[in-house]
Image (cartoon, rainbow, N blue to C red; front, top):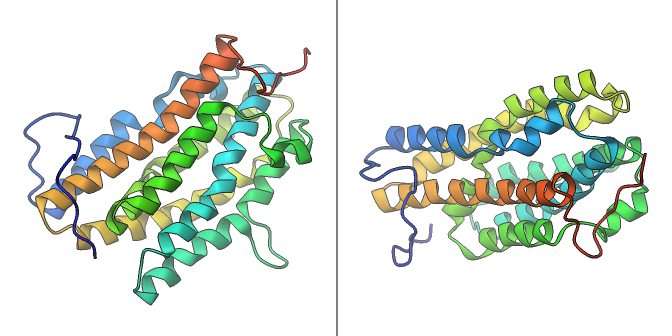
Amino acid sequence: MNAVPTSGMTALSIGKGIMLDSAEAMEATLRTIGATRYHSLHPFHRLLHGGKLNKGQVQAWALNRYYYQSTIPLKDAMVMTRFRDRMTRVEWRHRIEDHDGDLGSEGGIERWLKLTEGLGLDTAYVESTEGILPATRFAVEAYVHFCRDRTPLEAIASSLTELFAPNLHEERISGMLKHYDFVNPDIMSYFSRRLTQAPRDAGFALDYVKQHARTPAEREAVCNALIFKTNVLWVQLDALYHAYVDDHIPPGAFVPQAS
């Protein structure tokens, strides 16, 4: 495993004096990061799950999120290239299959397209990513570059937002089905499937970083990787809120049709 660089490393911003002297202390810090920084806390999600958005705003969210979802297999392929260890690659490979699917089996990207189609968006337009927000593209590409350029340990650590995803998916399923008459269980199948996939993936990643982050500097790098990933997710919602709640849609981005 590559050594974690210490020069230029950003300090943990959840508080000074944090002692990362054990794997258990690191895990506790990771869970604190999730509890305080995960994008479930973003105001846009509260509007989405509480039925406060109109159909066009929900379409904009699904359209932009597609770019993130469709890039996840590229990110995971990038992570796999970082490892000479065959068993790590074998373990990580199923993540690509989860999203891309396989011959005769539906993957997460197809399920997301089922959502966008059910919301009334043209699939060719969604797949083109022509109408996504600039901030969406920049944030997602920054995530891929992070997994390419930082250490393999940090690349795996950045996926640890999956520790906190199941609760968000449950809230999303119940809230959207309750509040939107244009949503049904069939088009929400992406989220129901992730209720079992995300815990499996998160369990492997957490065990990996606890085993391989052996020094305080490496544990700090793990925590900072998770902070980086929460920022990637948060800024996408910032952009959606600015464009579609505050009504500052940038040139070239998706414009919902008047209902």
